[in-house]
Structure formats: structure tokens, C-alpha cells
Image 1 (cartoon, rainbow, N blue to C red):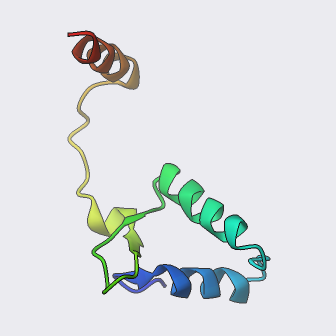
Image 2: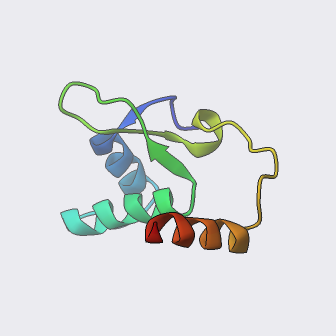
Length: 82
């Protein structure tokens, strides 16, 4: 279980403990970015100069169903062209 707010270096250490090679700094950063894109984690409050992360489901409230992805893309494109 990931604590509520986990610093980047703690996340990288957890990846390494889980058997994921983090010897290249860019690899770990890319893995964290991918986890954010997949809505597994999201950026949390800063801890001093450290970036922190939180589990997406614990930080972002569930939606109400909203609009479908296709409708959202059209709405974003229209808003951008104004």
C-alpha cells in the first residue's frame, strides 16, 4: 500500500524493491509519468523541494459519468478554436 503522499525518491525505491530496474534515472521518471497517464497515480502536494505522488483513486473524486470521450474531444477542440 502506498502512503497518502509519497515522495518521488520513495516511489523510485519502491519500484526497485519490486524488482523493477531503476538504475537509469530517466527510466524511473518515465515509469512515474506513465503511471500518471494511466491514472494510477497523480501529482500530490510538494514536500519541501520534493515532488510527491498520491494514488489517483484516493485523490480524485469519482465522476458522475459526465460526457463520453468523443464528446469531450469535440468540446475541447471547439474551445481551443475560439
